Image (cartoon, rainbow, N blue to C red; front, side, top):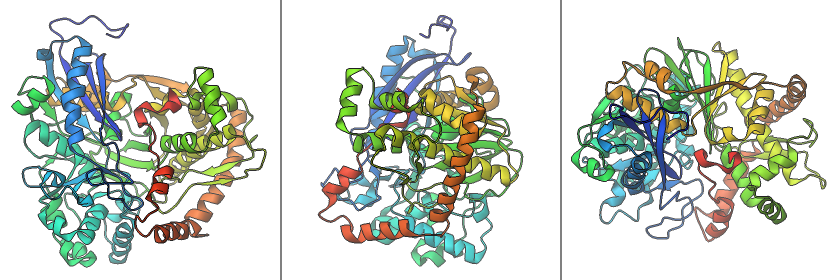
Length: 586
């Protein structure tokens, strides 16, 4: 029980929030009346992320693939939820609802009854039968065709996504599935987001959530891209929207159904309690951070960063991930932008580039390598390293929407130290966020308050860098489990404990207001570095030099799909820590 929380009474009611991250799922027990957190547990996915080989066969996967096994998600319900309840000390009969959130877009092909195709006998060896994780970027060629055709035809939905559809989203991944495994595509009855599939497992019925449908499924004003548009991409793709992804839409905070007897047996909860409509990990966090008013930008900072913000109307923001009516809370337009790599970049650098002596010294001091590098560099004057980096190691989500871009470091010399590069990477991600904030402002949707959540907020130096770069105070969420708390808040609304998500967030969310404020001298110095970042950003990202695209193409050609070099590929794609548990903030 939290030290500051009132004791549990028999009259208290509780909800469960389950947050599905990139590498693990976390369950959280939350009291309905005040948002106090009483127990949590984590279950790591046994298969993690399959980005080099397919676990079932050992088959080598091509570059840019990222797959998961859906059964790992059910294991979270069977293990993390009962353990969280046990840790909380509550009576399971006091739980009135459960809510979930997921990474996105993370779709999987299933049969009509929800059976994943990888579980159909004889299909376990087919890579396209598995979940395509959000960071599966192998559909870039399909995304390029979607964008080109949409621009040529003047499709009215394209500006709602900043003028570009991402390779991470449903239509690009679905088109890739059709063109690379048409037989499997024909066997598929639904291409369902994992956020909805896990709710399906809890209730026995399939309800599509408004958040992923709008942001990842191109559902605007009640319609998907037309059959004619899809047929122009590929005649066999004409029915994708109507036949493979269209489904009853559930609004956020609504009840998707009730907990089935089977799911009750998995979780140890009572059958018949409310199950909330699914949601996305970033968007669900907004009420937990009390960041639902227009102009409040919430950055959920972990493996990647997702930026979400409400506004009263629709504005076309170049490179945004989307604007959806009710995409965060009812009655407002929810905007999304993001950075494909943040904590992933820091972890890649520590795991692959930092010399062994740093690891040894960190261990001797009882620190993580992230903490040790931070301690070495945090007092250096801004610009003292003479470096500038581009934070595109996992491509660029906003504002360029181009996953063929890659990371860059400028200014390294024989005197450059590991901790200096580490700081330059911190700063590059902050510059990427400033680019997003300034793009929103230039489009008539200004950011009036910046709020941060996620595992990376545990590093105070990183948060101070963001405050200085943005020239804005940075507020931080109180909870260490923002998405899980947000899911619990939605569960409370679905159970009828609050009239809407805003009211529930007011009662159950918590915020450290202006936890970090900008240092004027540091902000002035960062303005100069940001100007250099912008020059590089536009030169490499807006057609001044397409060398990154050419290098990606050369890499694919050299590897021949997967080829005998998959071992080397595994070495340079080692999986970092989960966003909510990143050592950067430990």
